[in-house]
Length: 258
Ligand code: FPP
Image (cartoon, rainbow, N blue to C red; front, side, top):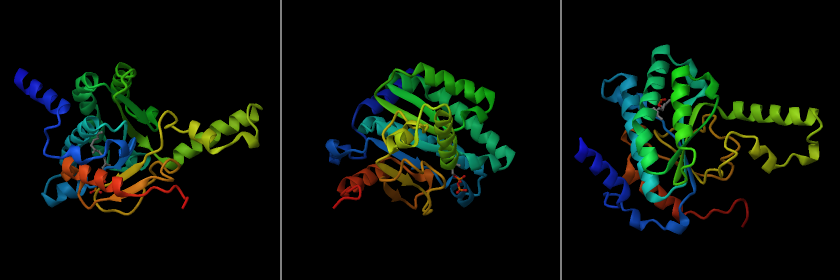
């Protein structure tokens, strides 16, 4: 048991993985990578497994990509783990996803503490089951002063719901006379979103080939570079992640200018 632990720690602190991080330009790394993790169900179906087994394998990929980001030096990783629409899935699947999330938080707590990773969550956290919320708040509180990287989980998250929440907050301030129409700027809007403490994503990755945004970070991805891969999330790994970062580093970001 001890030797396994030692090995895990070594792999996180060293650069000996088969993915060649050394080819990446440290000066051109994205600060914030956001991921739409899609394809767990299709991965399971292809193997005649049930959807929940797909999510289980997907949660192992989460661990791999969090580690890769920490090793590479990405400051913010936002993962779309559960959308506002996902509540409409069969109750058994919702329950399995909540159980997996709780398990993930419990099993990764130590690694987050050891590796200076802060856990953060965006979305309608109040809708999560009480036991999941408690674990989430516990790990968030324990890691709140970590500054090596932020793992930001989008949970019961919807971009439109986030915009509605922002508009309501601003409307209340306006009604109370604390804000007028002229004080509403893009910066003020960003400050009223769940992501107010972090930069907008530089890179948005979607797995499993679907060409859509699915209500994810609608305001924040205005200038994000988008990369869609056909790989299903459970098959996604470090090597492909590094290839995508290399592709990102070749792109010219113009933010609407020439
Ligand atoms: C999409 O695949 C994936 C989800 C709705 C949930 C993502 C959850 C995980 C990766 C595992 C648990 C999360 C954490 C943070 C430990 P899908 O079910 O829509 O796949 P399909 O489109 O192929 O059916």
